[in-house]
Image (cartoon, rainbow, N blue to C red; front, side, top):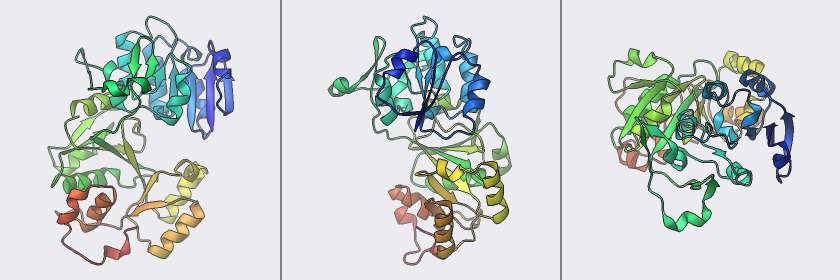
Length: 343
């Protein structure tokens, strides 16, 4: 289900062969757009940039990026010289806005094939230097036009940017990010970074990094030579910089009730995503009941773990399940799985 916010390009967007469940027309402040869709579940939002009041002021788009998941937004740009300037486009990328175009016909493609950072890195200026990723001439026919430039469709990338995000309050994203980093660094080049918080300081590990949501894209770009970037998103960090996200739920009764009261549609929003039960005391039967009642699928179940262990069997199982095959030979305990948690 898709929604659209339109103004100048309303007639062109009306001609798109796309189903919309909600459409609003006019000029709106970022706050008004956020308020209208705060509790409204949708797949993608098609946003006519002229529908944002004073949109040539990049801080107005920044207000949207702070309060919305921009990976779900496809931004239709106008022909303004400011909007199409290298600086403006670079700032869009820095905010995690990867799906932008001046071509209305490209919108349908972007709904099914959203861009990653690699696809728009050519517009990103780092210290006034444009990032120019390698492209193959064989793929030129599949490219999507953006003005006079060309945006390549998403390609497989080696770097995995894994976000860890709390769904229930204080579900353990910071500690889990740190423990996964300790496991991965045995076989992979990895860095862990915390966004908009400073809890890493209590872990006494100088290799842990800190950034804010505005600089996260720059951090990813500057670490593109690594295998893995682990991003502690805490409760509200931006997911758009990540290639995948683990959503942490601590399945205690009080925390689950608080979650449902806050957002009754939360499990509908999490459908198809990687749900991790963290600090869990649930057995296999309990997990089956949880999945049935929430109409969701648990990706992995993590019991309380000893954060002082150098090699944690449970977290190794999780990482192998995620495709980090090099860790398999680290798993010295063959046979049964701890608490039968591996699903």
